[in-house]
Each structure stands twice: as structure tokens, then as C-alpha cells.
Amino acid sequence: MCPKCHRIVQLINGSKRPYFRHIGEKSNLQAESAVHLAGKKWLANFFRPFFKVDLEYVWDAEQRLDLFVRNSHWRLAVEYQCSPISRAELARRNQLYIKKTLRPLWIFGLQHYRRIHNLRHLQNIVSYSSQWGFYVLFKLPQDNFLRLNCHYQIEPHTTILHWQQRKIKHWQQLLQLRIPKPFYSLPPINWQKWYQQQQQHPNRQFVILQNWCYSHRLSLIEFIKKTPSQTMFPVYIYRPCYLPLLWQLHYSVTTFLPLVTTAAIQACAAADYAKFDNLV
Figure 1 (cartoon, one colour):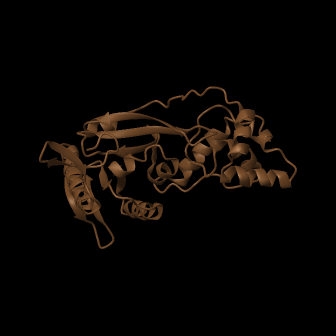
Figure 2 (cartoon, rainbow, N blue to C red; figure 1 turned 45 degrees about the horizontal axis):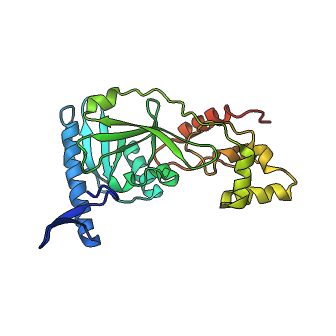
Figure 3 (cartoon, rainbow, N blue to C red; figure 1 turned 90 degrees about the horizontal axis):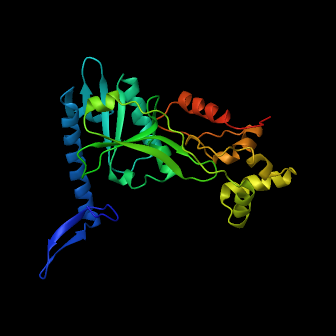
């Protein structure tokens, strides 16, 4: 694997010396299939000491599971998702498993790990638990362990994400893992300076809300100044610093997360609401 771009490479015995070459698109599809199969076999061995495991389990005409994992306490539908997938398809499959009294466990591959810093992509694949907050499990081809990225939060004035990572080598470690919610410390935010920067290089969200405030003779900066210098949950359509205005307008502020319940999203939004001062 290339250490710079993390794409799969092939060793070529050149006439002068050996070298590595990035695998082409057609070969990459074949390699992706091989990586997916190898990953499923690794996961089967990961679960097998504690569960009965079936690979490529055909549940019914609607769905085939990557792994059906069960014992007297657990019935897991384990999906190793290497290729891109839409929010709608994730939600559809996730709900199918729940209706069949299975507990979905999504584990994502290298393509998704490469987009680890992208908020919108995170919102596609993130799950939630009381032990780990917002989290994603990854299995990379070169790893002999799972990567648990957990307690995702976002800065209130940017799309910069914060999280913690743990390496998981066996099921019991994952089952017993409890990670206290961290406090991601941010330096005080100079909102006036930030606002001026947005005026010079505005994005779509800023333009929409700024224009609305102009038309109603309101000051957007006065709403933004109510935002604390604390990280927030990654559940919003807009940047969290716009929440004071959006709440006053009674806008829907949270986004659809296909692997997270509405109740969990609302509870996290309520916890963030309590951080804001002087909201009336």
C-alpha cells in the first residue's frame, strides 16, 4: 500500500530495479474484491472464538449478510463496507436488520477511512453508543486489528473534526471498552475576526443567513457571538455557530444520520443547546 495516498500498489520487477506501481482502475476493482473477501475472513476469525459465524449468510430474498454472528446473547448482522454507499441504502439495510431482530454492526474499509476528516462523509457512516459517543469502526487491509474512532465532535465555527482512536484486537476488548467522554479544549474564538473573514470569503451558508438578517434588519454577528468556544456534536446541517439564529427561526437544524436513531440525535442537540448563553 502506498504510504502517501494509501492506494493499493503492485510490485513490478523492472529491467533495472524493482519498483511499485499504483494498480489501475480495472485491476483496482479486482483488488477491492480481494480486499473485501480477505477482510470478511479476518472478521470471521475475530468473532469466531466467541460466536458461531457464517460468511455470506443468505437471510432471505431481501438481504445477504457479510457475516451472521450469534451466540446465546447476541445476534449480529456484520457488514464490512469497502465500496461507496448512499445514505438511503445504508438506512434501508440498517432498518431491515433491526426489523429482523438483528443488531447491525457496520465496519468500514479503506475508501471510507481516507475521508476520515470529511464531516459530510462522517455523517453518512457514523453510529452512536453511550460508551463511545459518535463512532465508526474501520478495518484496513494492512491492519491485524480494528480501528475504533470515537467521541467525534466538531468545532463550532469550522468543519474541523475531533475524535479519539483505539485499536481493537479481539471481541472482548471491544465489548468491555468504556471511553470517558473527552473535553476537546479550544482557544477562545475571536468572533468579530471570524465574521470579517467570512465576509471576505463567504460560503453558501453564510450568504443565505447574512442575506436573511439584512432583509430583517438584524445582525448575524450578534447571534454568532452567543456561541461558546466548545466542540459540538456532528449532527447539524449548518455550522453550530449559526444555531442561535436558526433556533430563533424555528428551523430544523439536525441532519439525517442513517445509522443513528432520531432520539439519540435529539438528545445530543439538547445537550449542545445547554452550552449556549443568553438564548431567548
